Length: 417
Image (tube, rainbow, N blue to C red; front, side, top):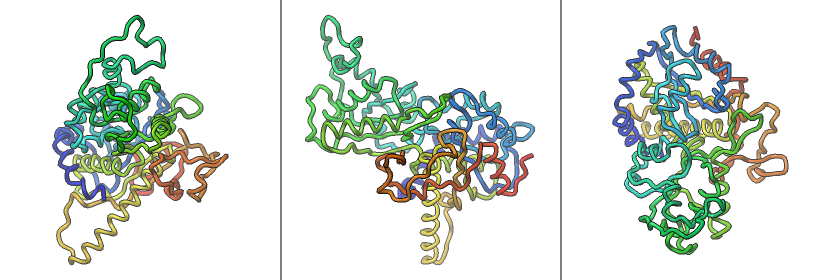
């Protein structure tokens, strides 16, 4: 299993790379009390719509902190956004929610890339928007090339916009060293430029000086963050997300080559590795709270059935399988000591709010995976995710995040005040 293979290395990585996290959490003096659960919050469509906070979110977080502003339970914000640094997102949330949010509580779609150390010394091409070069270096990548750096080195590649074409003469190319891998952080601003240059890199084994060749297959590694087809901003209807950009890239590559675009990794909700990483952050906060018992239950609150609900349910299924396997192993060996780093939560409940992508009048998805795309019903999941309709069924459907948190505290027998 993916988690079993990387759990210990991830744990050590978190302890070293976030060495100050526990200290900063302790300095906030979380409220003390018996612990049993943690909360995972999506952001867009749950807490905010674009730059506007959802009114229920402020009310909700007033209940999640005590009179001194100290958190009562571990809280992690798990978003598929990835166009900024964690510090920036934490400051933004602190301002909107009017409570202190620390960077060690924020998990962006690209955060698990810290674990992919085998790529950190490679020359990587990064696509997205915002300070993506700084983000890449912060994640551990040492040799980073942006799309703008690539188009400046090869000025004749980007020609869709006639205003960006060379005018009087064709500048000489700079002939960069070949690209070893491609990292897709999120939807870029100029889709045509990014699509063109990424295809150029994939069809030339990372060297746009060469001619296209579809015979060199498979292509260099591609790692993609954030598979959301749609997301909710201020507009009445959902907006295109990075998942839509991936659909375009996959379609173009197959149309040109006849082959499927392959991903080395797909990161962000609904991938299990994202929830593995979020759980470790919850665990760190529980330790900072001084909880003697491990977190037993996670509640994931989101607005997107395909990303938030599918991901939480997929992770819950993983937890049940892992616990069953562990019980069988212990039964065969007669018990023995339990590694605390392997003491998994009992489960993860999914909670769907109606303030974002999802609305109660939407039609249910078909139960037959073969009918995933019909005239009326469309599967919005990524191409590489098997469609399992049961994973789209939330544990709870609530109106908004305030109602979700109130239900969790009621389930757990905790007072909110």
